[in-house]
Each structure stands twice: as C-alpha cells, then as structure tokens.
Amino acid sequence: MASCCWPSGCAPATCAIEARLYSAAMSRLFRDVDGGPRCPHGSVVCIGAFDGLHVGHRALVRHAVARARALGLPAVALSFEPLPREFFAPGDPPPRLLSPRAKVEGLLSLGIDQVGLLRFNSAMAALTPEAFVIEVLVRHLSVREVWVGPDFRFGKRRGGDLALLQSMGLALQAEGQGFAAGAIEPVLLDGERVSSTLIRAALQAGDFKAAARMLGRPYAISGRVVPGERLGRTLGYPTANVRLGGKVPPLTGIHATRVHGVAGQPLPAVSSLGTRPTVDGSEPLLEAHLFDFDGDLYGRRIEVEFVARLRDEEKFEDLPALVAQMHRDAIQARAILSQDSTRAPA
Ligand SMILES: Cc1cc2nc3c(=O)[nH]c(=O)nc-3n(C[C@H](O)[C@H](O)[C@H](O)COP(=O)(O)O)c2cc1C
Ligand SMILES: Nc1ncnc2c1ncn2[C@@H]1O[C@H](COP(=O)(O)OP(=O)(O)O)[C@@H](O)[C@H]1O
Image (cartoon, rainbow, N blue to C red; front, side):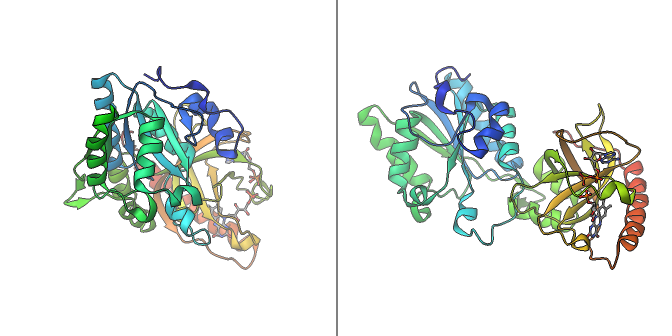
C-alpha cells in the first residue's frame, strides 16, 4: 500500500544511484526529504543501516510491515547511502555486504512500501537527533510508529536513542504530531546476537553455511556483466565480469559458486573475487567462469552465490602458471558443487 505517498519524489537519473535503481524501485525510493510531505496521512517507519538485511534486520522490517498493515498505513524503511561509516572513513571504507540496489530490492520484497535511502553527507551528519525527528520523521513522513533495532543511535554524534524518540513522540502529542517508538529484541543464533560484523567474519573465514544462516539466505553478489580485457577466452576461461561499484567486498579469493539469472536453474561456476595481480589489475572485480556454458552474457544481470572457498588470490609468474591453477580450481569447484545442491530458502 503506497497510495498516500507522493509518487513524484524520485525522478530517474537525478544521480547515479537513482538511475540504476529507478527501474526496480520506481517511485518507491526517495533520496532526500525536500519537496513536501511524502506520507501526509501517517506512516510506520523502521530505521537502520540494513547492511546484509540479515535475520535481525528482517525481523525488524517484518514487524514494521505488520504494524503498518494493522494500522492501514504505508511502511517506510529509512537507511543511508553512503553508510555513515563509509562517509566518516572515505579512504578506508568498511566492507559492504549488500549493494544499495540489493538493499532496496530486499526491503521492497519484505513488504516495505517506501524506501528512504537518505544521502549521508555533512549536512546529514550535522543534523541533531531532534532536528532529524522533526524534519524527517514528523514533517516528511507524519510518523505514527517508529521501530528500531537494539542499541539504535541516530543524529549528530549518535546523540539520539530510543528514549529520545519515545519522549519526543509523547511531547508532540499536544500538537497532534505524536508517535510511538519501540525496539525489537535482538535476534540470536546459537546464543550469539546476529550482526553484520559476525557475517563479515564468517565470509572471510569461508564459512558460507554460517553466513547463510545469519543472512537468512546464501551470500551472493549481484550485478550486470560488463566487458573486461577479453583475455579470459584466450586462456580457455571466459569470465562474466561484475563490477562492485566502488564498494569493498567482505571477502576475496577463488570460490565454488552458482550463478543465477542465466538459465532457469542456477549454473555451477568457479569465480574469482579480487584485483587480479597477475595481469596488473587494481579495481576489485567479481569474475565467474560458468561450466559447460557458451553464450553472450554482456549486459545481463546475474547473481553469484558463494558455496565454498578454494584459495586466496595469487600473483603468478606468468599466464601459463595462472591457467594451470585455474584448471585445478575448476576441477575442485566442480567436485564441490556436484556434492552440494542445497540452496537455503530466501
Ligand atoms: C578460477 C579463477 C581463478 C583465478 N585466479 C586468479 C589468481 O589467483 N590471480 C590473478 O591474478 N587472477 C586470477 N583470476 C583472474 C584472471 O586473471 C582473469 O580471469 C583473466 O585475467 C581474464 O580476465 P578478463 O575476464 O578481463 O578477460 C582467476 C580467474 C578465475 C576464473
Ligand atoms: N562459460 C562462460 N562463462 C562466462 N562467460 C562466458 C562463458 N562463455 C562465454 N562467455 C561470454 O564471454 C564473456 C567473457 O569472456 P572474456 O574473454 O573473459 O571477456 P571479458 O574480459 O570481456 O570478460 C562473458 O561476459 C560472456 O559474455
């Protein structure tokens, strides 16, 4: 139910992220709070970085969606792009689990009606918690309920918390702008609180089963296939290349993978995620060589699901040494994938 929200808030191609997201998210994405109220008749809002959209994030989002349905109001998810941690450490950005596009698509698939991917810039960083509540939650979204995760902090120097949301919601009742605020319980797995940090550690360790349990789905990277050096085909290993859009991946190395989006069923592949030191590469790139496949993938959106880690990326002395190792990787990946046919439910 997105009916009460202004559909004109997101024009295509006003920035790179909108342009990429527009076809998927249409008018259900907004990047700032200019231009009048988006939800003049009220909304239920959840807020978070949502990197990974793991089972804890999903519990929060599903709760907000259920509350919105019960109240007959649109469900709005608020997040930031870049993430605050990326804004504050531009030279050393933390690894990302999800691209902005995957985050928006994931939120919409959970039933969210409107996604606010607010630009985190110096103005946003300087906004006091009180101003954030008034400008974003009250004026723009006419919030009736706001839901956050455990230990949620927001606003300048992370000065705002659940208690502040609750007291402001109460104080604003006199002006007819009151709202309720609550936090969900932390989601635990094996007694540990699920977090993006734990998931990154599992991925770096090659523990894809643990990562999938925490994510609620297998770890995957999706993107459009772009042309590369056209060297792969001459080596006998053509690879579908996916760029990471400047985001730092949470893992590198050579992996057994399954590629979705090419055929009706996922196709087995061996994939490399790294900078390709042997051919003097520098930009991190995901490359998937699909087994027993011959076709043109340029321009296609694929999703590469990680199944097992094979090894670190290496700098080889020459191309024959690299190809010999790719051959061993391919044999190992085929063997692993032929034994592992599971894909956890999304
Ligand atoms: C299974 C596999 C393993 C790879 N391992 C390495 C590696 O250890 N070091 C490296 O520099 N590049 C590695 N690569 C990347 C290759 O250098 C790259 O695929 C090749 O240069 C072709 O690039 P192109 O797709 O731009 O034509 C690997 C690629 C694959 C598919
Ligand atoms: N088995 C395969 N796995 C991956 N890509 C393949 C395969 N067969 C053909 N292709 C096509 O070849 C392209 C990769 O060839 P490659 O020589 O590595 O060029 P590039 O450097 O442009 O990636 C892919 O983008 C896809 O269109």
